Amino acid sequence: NFIQYLYGKGILVRKDWMQNAFRPEQVRRYSRQLNFFLDIEESEAAATALLKRIMDCRVALIGVGAVGSWILRELVQIGFQRFIIVDPKELRPADRTRNAFFDHRLIGRSKAMVAESFVHGQALKPETRAVQAPLDIDTDVDELIGSNVDLIINTADEPYIGATSIKLSRYCVTKSLPLLVAGGFDAHLASLSEMIVPGQTPCSDCYAKH
Image (cartoon, rainbow, N blue to C red; front, top):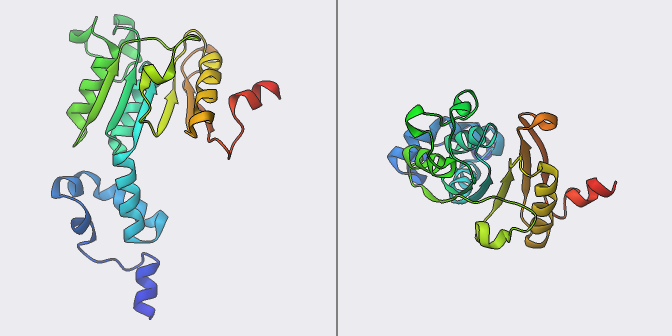
């Protein structure tokens, strides 16, 4: 009983628990992360399920500029590999000091496609779609990102992060999707702001009316 208690608390683990759940290349890539998840979840099964959930999650990232590109880089390192990447702009020389994927040879290329190439170069089993289109007040979100999404991240600074976030928040409330608001413009520089989870947190309309 004591041994089973130690297993249940994650203090004792089976030596091959990662190998039983993941392929060798996945273990090599994510072993440190799995150990971290084990500390949080206190069971091999829960740590395994958490990484698998991350790998299966489909993220719609709106904007891959000074903030969005770095968020995408970190998400891929964590294990996320399924993305819809939306950005209407091309890579410019001014992005040299801001964009995580800047390469002078890629100037003039679509930011969304450059970001997509990064995902395919880093993720073990990437599944992506690059969309070179803006998000504005009249955009049909379903047409822009599709319906098969688990998380939306908004870093679009045009026309305004507040307007686009209210639009996406209203969409997410109807779809029961979480929304992370981030940004890289003057009043919101390089910040991760509210995480809106319908039914659990206030939405953008709540903040605006309050």
